[in-house]
Length: 341
Image (cartoon, rainbow, N blue to C red; front, side, top):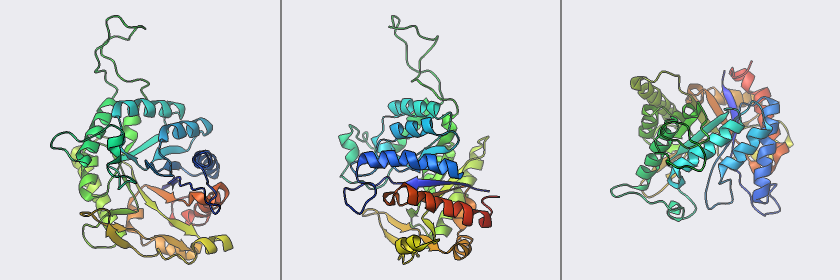
């Protein structure tokens, strides 16, 4: 059995060819798709966060709105770039969204990927401390967030407050019990996956990672997951961690599917450079009739290792089409893979 959700990048463009032509379209359609996905029986609605881009960027209003309109589906991010975040403010926003959703928030965070502007986090008022680089800063912000989400007071109260305080040191409010165990780290390398395990975060592994061995993407990703689980066991955490992988998977059910994805050129891994130092491997997409698709997916070692699969969706093709994409996987692929009864 496997949890199956969708991951939307929330692209929008004023182009007449796009079904998502404004930021309002991207946000409102995201809510509609999450509601529809819940009705289909999908397990998760996840959203990518990018700044300075025509994509979803401020996740907590969206997550709270989805939380208010749904009842069971997990609501998450994949991922929030911690270089841009004030961890205390983030703890308040996340706590509020999680309480509205009744404890369904699954918060994916990471160091982030290359962005639309140079050092965009500087415009948000952040800069690495002396002897830090931007990755160190992201991990420092993360450590603070994790500490705050333990729920312990640390701030000395005003002896003459405007409103009465509870006894002892104070913490950011609202606090949502259990959210600390629903934080995920988006790891691009084996080392950062181990780092996440040591700190008790769940693991998100996307459609790209550092090319560390030259092996096919799904094999490298499976090894990353195994290294993560080994580090988790060595750290002695009491709970069982969760692991998600992302994939572009399209069942070719009709002529629309064949027109959009039948001639895909992304049926093999690709290697490139995220920056001048980081060689990355990008995982293939899957697009085929259900019977062939099932046989292809059975060979993917990383999907087999994960407990959660996030389907990356073409959000600019509109809510109705993306409901069709998700439904095709849930009905025609997942049962044969053993992911659904």
